Length: 340
Image (cartoon, rainbow, N blue to C red; front, side, top):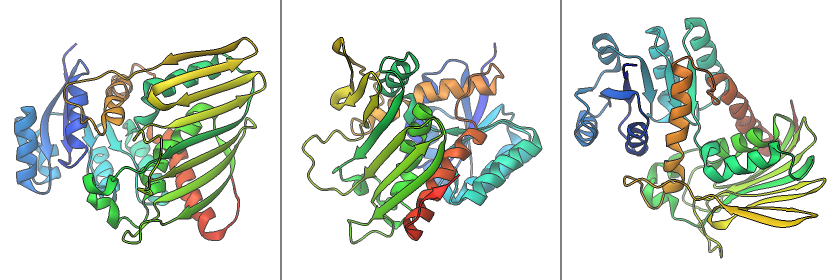
């Protein structure tokens, strides 16, 4: 089967690991890059051997023969770019968070549906080895019916050093990290029927919230507390960017702890497995956990593009996560439970 030809929109922070991850997936080839600052696009193209660079996405779409487009631009441009690609009848992948508002995300999903093109969101967090193992244990019924869970991603890491643009976001931790963690909650426990959220700003020199706590009640009867934040304080078990999970069930518990250990405790005792993620030479040591999960995520999306089924994070699916994110903002602002 011939390689699928694709273009990337964007040459910023996440473009390099995303392109490196695509290199690990057989059957695709990046042939063009668009970036509004041409010099950044040229630097990225030189690093990855991409033959064409454009400052105008419309010119790129007119001139290149493509099978899909991967959008890795800043979030406020996602809607414009997704609908532009859809108008050219090309499958489109969009980086998370999908957009800056629920209404915008809905327009993106509806626009692609009207155009009859597949739309996917690059939501890689659920593709971490350890989180997939937790899902497997749940599906196998190891601990019986789950009734309560906690999902934590709390870090003292200096995240604003590597990504200074995060300081300027009016909506920060719920869109940036909440998109991941609330998607993990959906992946593990299904859809929510209610939500309550509280947010805080610990850093005095940022615009958005850097700490959030969300309580979900799922349709399957699980209460899930999702705690997230970048307070940049001192945390004893600092393992950025690992997610820790603890699930209680009728017959036992599942814990995802530091260093990728998944432990299952039942009447038979405790058994554990260390789910170390694959390592690639191109990984940034600080972000390797999130970057390595881009590989299976991309492979899954490619199956969807090829029409082979199995793509998990379609635009329609991720829209449910977007609804949780913006419902959390509503709940925190109003101090009330949001019901779905």
